Length: 163
Image: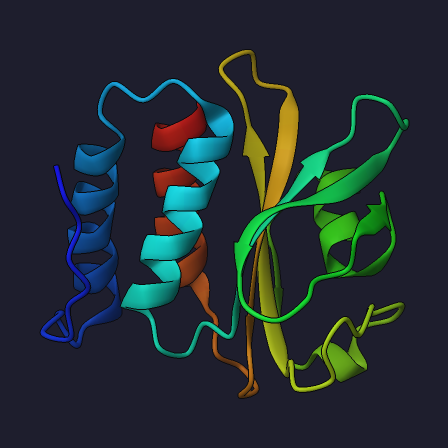
């Protein structure tokens, strides 16, 4: 299936996520490569949500204990490595819990990869065996851009794509 960027998506956030999830699953049907899956998810979500300033994955590095390394993403230069427990991505990796941060500048230990980032959501990504394989990170330039709808929809999507 080919993918065509669109600007006629539903205004309702949950409906937009549902439409995008169906497209992502259709594009990825039969594709087993994790890197290709991550790149596709990042690309389609970045295109579908104009507020998404940085959209991508930090992957668990099998060569370095409790460290994430930048994976496929869309946006400006990302941090290359993040230790578990450091910043929003590290908190999600260490706790296994989705992090919604309305103001990144008020988050203790926030890593400012790009100073234009104002809010962030980070979702832990687990593989089929239930082990953490990555975190999915989205930054926005406006404060409080993410809420429970984003968390629920992204958790469901990532579970279907990688679980």
